[in-house]
Length: 247
Ligand code: NAP
Image: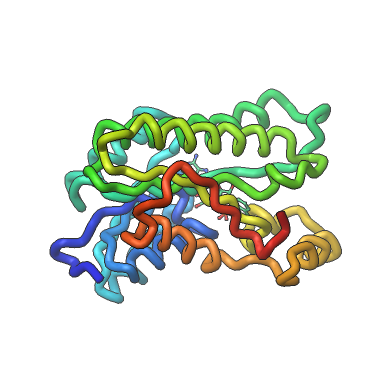
C-alpha cells in the first residue's frame, strides 16, 4: 500500500453518492489520494472527505459539472495543485431516466448525452494531456446495453458511446503506458437504480442474476480497485461486466 506522502492521485467523478462514493472509499483504503468530484451534493461530498480524512486518507472535494469542459479543466487544475498530477481517472458520473424513446423529450435526450457522453469525453480529453505515464482510466458503461430492455434506448446509446471511447482511446494512448477500460455494472442498489421503481420491479431485477441479489456499490468498487491496480496492468481496452451473471 502507498503511504500518504507518496500516494498516487485518483479523480473519481460523481463520487458524492452511490457507486462513486464506494469507489472513493475503496481507492482511499488502497492508498490513493482521492479527489471526490460532485455536481450538486456538496454536503455528501464534504461528509465523505471528513470520513476519509478521519481514517488518514488525503482527499478533497471538487465541484464540477462534468458536462462543462471549462469546469472539468478547472477541476484538473485544482487537483494538480492540491494533490498532484493525476494517475487514475474514474469516469463514474452518470444519469439514467427510463422513458420509451417515443416519449423522450429533447431536454432529457440532451441531459443524458451531455452528462454520460460529453462528460466522459471532457475528462478523457483533459486526461490525455495531463495524466502521468503508467496511469489508469476506468469508464462506466452498463449491463443494460446487453439486455435491450424497453425504456433504455437513450441511456444505452450513451453507454455504447462510452464503450466506443474506451476501445479507441486505449489505442490512442499507445506509448504512454496508460490503460483504458470500462466496467459495466448490472443493477446496483443506488438511487439511480431504485428511484421510481416499485418494490415488485426491484425484486424482479434482484432475481435476474444467478447470484439472486442486487449488486451493492462495493461490488463495483472492488472491480475498479482491481482495474487500477498493478495486477490489471495487462488488461487494456476491455469492458468488464460485473452483474452477478445476468449477461
Ligand atoms: P447515483 O447514485 O445516482 O450517483 C450519481 C453520481 O453522479 C452522484 O454523485 C452525482 O453527484 C454525480 N453526477 C450526476 N451528474 C453529474 C454531473 N453533471 N457532473 C458531476 N457529477 C454528476 O448513480 P450510481 O448508481 O452510483 O451510478 C454511477 C455510475 O454507474 C453511472 O455512470 C451509471 O450509469 C452507472 N451504472 C449504474 C448502475 C446501477 O444500477 N446503479 C448500473 C449500471 C451502470 P451530485 O449528486 O452532486 O449531482
